[in-house]
Length: 175
Image 1 (cartoon, rainbow, N blue to C red):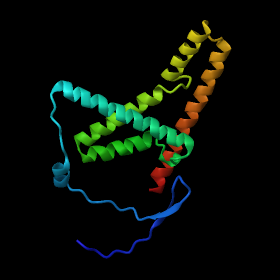
Image 2 (image 1 turned 90 degrees about the horizontal axis):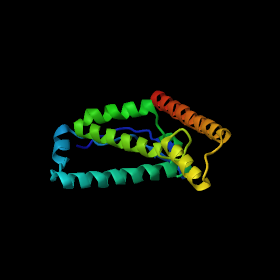
Image 3 (image 1 turned 60 degrees about the vertical axis):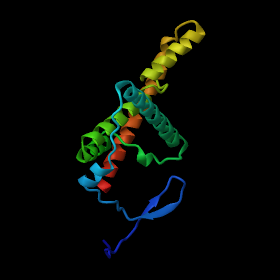
Image 4 (image 1 turned 90 degrees about the vertical axis):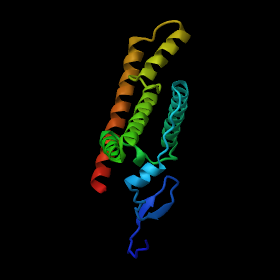
């Protein structure tokens, strides 16, 4: 159906520094269209397990790639979301149906698992790093080093949590 509408694009800065205009539209997808376009594979159990492992690996790589892009500035920190954004996206996915909701929850779980394995003190990856350093050195790290790195890790994680929460609030009140 053709419609005449008057639009005013909103200026958006891309991570590469370019500024573009966005009008903020997306297709209207009905439940009938969603059912028609949804493909469910019904594999035998071992094949389903294999497909699950492959999908988990691809989401793990996606998480690491996204994290790398945030660190190198190829992706905007504006994309970093915290609990408010996760709850909002979970609600959006739940409105789409059970399968999109479960897929979103799987993505969040995998992403949190991957981030937990980063070598940051206080996270499991930081503890693995401590064990690796102790194995190489042949003796435990000093209490002072452990205390210093754990404080560094705490402030890093607290800063990230505050930043993501403030980012959520900014998005919530600006949209």
